[in-house]
Image (cartoon, rainbow, N blue to C red; front, side, top):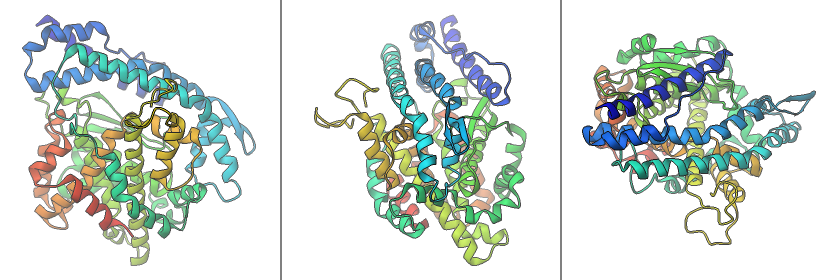
Length: 480
């Protein structure tokens, strides 16, 4: 029993210190050291795993492997933090690279595109290979830990057959081409960034900009779930990293802190909606579960709740209810749908990048399995994947940054596709306005309460949904 408690405590200490460190960094407070699990925790698990029920055993092992991987990722994350503050050439002199990345998402005007892209690329170039190397080292460390622990697949590990990333890119190829055509951007990166920024649609958001989080939380009110967020979730200082999306941290299970990103306009609203939905999923977890399940190691169900909430913004009816005319409401809904589709395609490309192998042995070891020995090295393959996802040309350094920086591309893709399919399943069960039907709240609660004991695919199976067909059909339904 002593070994078992050592293994459990190692995960509790790591997860708690991880959240404290993120909060301290956002608040500009004194740095907090993250207490990663080490070999002793893995050994303790191996000694005690026979004492655990399978669900907790497999989740605990997954947490330990994730902690070991995060320790190996630390040099790459520290390099990223240093690079974000390094000066690059800006419009009026040197600026931190972080500011150059923010300028990308501010929709640079024609004529400034090259300067803004050049500044962003200048910071990404030296960092890209280090991030790839750190990711490769982390994957190797996790594999070694799992090999030593020999657990089963934890409940939210995902389908053994794969994540469907290539199939999702195939299924949405024509739809994304139609979106690009509707946006009038062709294959120009600057035009894509301006369409993503959608400054012309700021009007309905600017009037209530400061109330964003309350406004999004209120979307759960008809289901009686807004109070859960008010009690257990809080918005903190911005995370200050080179990521437009908000980040979540959990000082303790069911206690959620949202660290805002920097994305403006409708793009920022959608990213915030995903964070609010995800926060609700974590806030609803049952306190009776063991820590390894109460604090999901992957959390595709909370992430799918985020995708569900973001889809509300893709429904023109929501904007009409806020007083917009039919034409403007349609534009807000359609642009929201296009942005969500694009995000899912980037997640698919990132998932594929994780399955690469580099025959040169350099640069983190990443090319699609099955490629010939003389296949292009990581950077070129990442650029190809990113360009396919976006539909526009992208500098290699930015492509590698886009696909290597998120550590959860596969998980995000599973949640995005699952969220699309869940909308269809909930609509089938509770009609078009399922998000106003109190009976659907019990379905959401029942899934989220199980924490790491349920995957989005399992939830869909319970509801009779088809992740592949229904997800693509829902995305097509929202399209132009």
